[in-house]
Image (tube, rainbow, N blue to C red; front, side, top):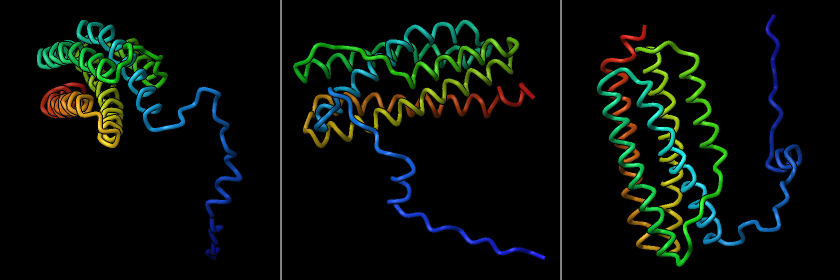
Length: 188
C-alpha cells in the first residue's frame, strides 16, 4: 500500500527564519563600488596564488598537450595579474590582495589530488578536474566583476575583465578537449 506524502509549502519567511540573518561586519560593503573593489582584491590574491601553483601542476602533469596548456595558462595568468593591477590604477587605488578562501580551497584540493594519484594518465585527469574547478570559479568571478564594472561605468576595468574572462573560458574549453580526446580514456 503506497502512502501519499505531502510536501510542506516552504515560504521565503520560513527559509529566512530557519537560516537566520547574517550580521554585516563593521567594514562591510555598503555600495556596489565597495563590493567591486573587495572582489578585485580577492581575485588579485587568487591570480597571484595561481602563478605559484601552476608550475607545480605543470611539473606533475605527464601528457604533452596538458603540459603545454598549463604553460600557456601560466603565461596568461601573469597577464591577468597585470590587468588587475591596471584596474586598481584606473580606480585610483593601490593594488592590494585579500586572501581568497575559495581559491585556497580549490588549490588545496588540487594538491590533494596530485598526492592521491599515481603519476600518469590518472593524475593528469585529476589535474584537469582540479584546473577546471579553478577555471569555473574564475569565470564566475570575472563575469560578476565585469557586470559590476559595466554598472559602475568603469570602462577600463570592464575591458580588462572581459579580456580575462574570454581567456578563462578558452582555457576551460581546451582542458575539456584534452580530457575528452586523450586523457580520460587512458586513465580508465
